[in-house]
Image 1 (cartoon, each protein chain N blue to C red):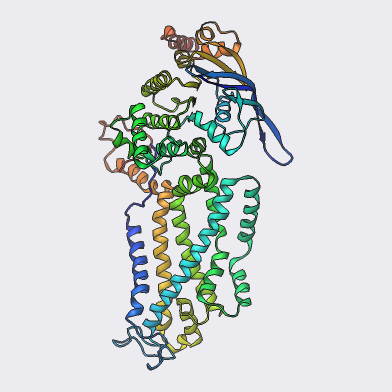
Image 2: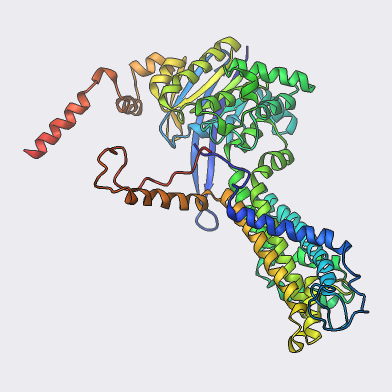
Amino acid sequence: MGTLEVRNLVKEFRLGHGLRRSRLRAVDDVSFTLEAGKTVALVGESGSGKSTVARTLARLETPTSGEILLDGRSVSGSRSALRAYRHDVQMVFQDPFASLNPFHTVAHHLERPLQLHGVARGREAVAEQVRGLLERVSLTPTEAYAAKRPHEMSGGQRQRVAIARALAPGARFLVADEPVSMLDVSIRLGVLNLLARLQREENLGVLYITHDLATARHFSDEILVMYKGQVVERGPSDQVILDPQHDYTKTLLAAAPDPARHGRLRDEVRAELAGERA
Amino acid sequence: MAETRFLPRRSAKLVAGLVITVGIVLFAVVAPFFVQDPRFSGNDAFLPPSADHLLGTTKLGYDVLAQLAHGARGSLVVGLVAAAIAIVLSLIFGIFAGYAGGWTDEVLTMVTNIMLVIPGLPLVMVIAVYLQNRSLWLVAFILGITGWAGSAVVLRSQARSLRSRDYVEASQVAGERTVWILLVEILPNLLPLLAAQFLFAVVFAILGEAGLSFIGLGPNGSITWGTMITDAYGGNAMSAGAWWWFVPPGLLIAVFGAGLSLVNFSIDEVVNPKLRVVSEATDRRRAPEVAAPEAAPAAPVEPAEPAEPKAEVTA
């Protein structure tokens, strides 16, 4: 078991320079706990600060104030502490077309974290681990995929590689920053199901960042709704979706297409057009 | 889907450029073994080209072909050494500044900008005047340390853009060291750009050396294309009508520069795919005009406006 806890996280960005300086508070006092084996969804519109939370968790940004606690312990900024932290906490980026280096093969992307985190030593052991990782993300035949370069693969396959890379150090917590928003609708479910399966099998704690309430409800135990840097609503998934308290959550829900209202919008638009003509 | 290419396509430009470049390099490497001593003055002066002296002789009786072959060596050495120095400096000042950001970036960029606004040739002249004994290597060194600022600016902006790419951040998350990220993740993606900058620096240095030599500040005691032109000028080749003395080195400088530029254009098409797409997009736009537009109702897929120029993907 283990926990990844975010406590009173604040992140400010300085904008501009010289005399015209201002501050943007991207994340304002956000706290939550990620438990092993649980998925927490962070939902919000663009610019609500979800990605900044992800980047801070991945230690790509340093918090302005607040703490990140891994298994109850604060993480210092030293090299070795950072590496130990990254051994446990990894991130899947939003855009699989940008997150893989176009110059390198799939094998390179997986070998490096394996070597850096001492998961495997020696060429044969590393190759064995790479095969294992590719199998876990269902990229078979593994030999063929290991030799490919990013441009030879589809978005879904790339994202699977990115997930395998995040798993390579043996991470216990995964921060998935809109992992399917750049993918074709037809393959989103496959990638999400893969994440869900891995989460179950490996007892991962997953922070699933999305703007899609439907998948958030489907794949996560808890939902946090962010708006302008603050968490405005939180609770078990079904509760948040079925009984939203905050106005912003209601707006979000209303904005999502609802299958039950199938065709109604179309009829409304037609009626409006007919009215205009008359 | 955007595809990244690392090798230029085999175009007419590339082939022509490579033939010229490789040809001249081979000439510089091989020819000196088959010609007279370039300082052998036992020939008659001002002999026009003949079977014995393919490119004639100079005022002092030197064989022009021999001078040209050894001069090719000298000029290429100056070009390569100066370009190597310039590229290393521009890597340090460009990529390091771009990646590091912050104060490091400010300081390094300031140095780059100062170097950029100092006019190159006058600076080189001032340095060269102070150094009375100028070897070939010293001239190459001077040209190298004065010719890096332009490419440093280009590399810096490129490195800045690469720094924030997801795959660079992904390797940070994986725990890579900065040096590794620079050398293994970023540098390979800059290779086409670096190659272009290098070739440009070679041309720049060869021209610079020729210019220095012509005003009498070139290397002492070595033969380059530049010193040949100077000698021809000093030896009144023009008034003597000895075109075979000054035309070959001048022509080789021009042709070599053109060859490298052609290779560079091909590399540019890799770096900047827009250059490559333009011709194909215009082709596509022209195609329907040829195929009688009225008589073609069987093409409902084709939109009225010309297809948007897509980045060429496969092939």
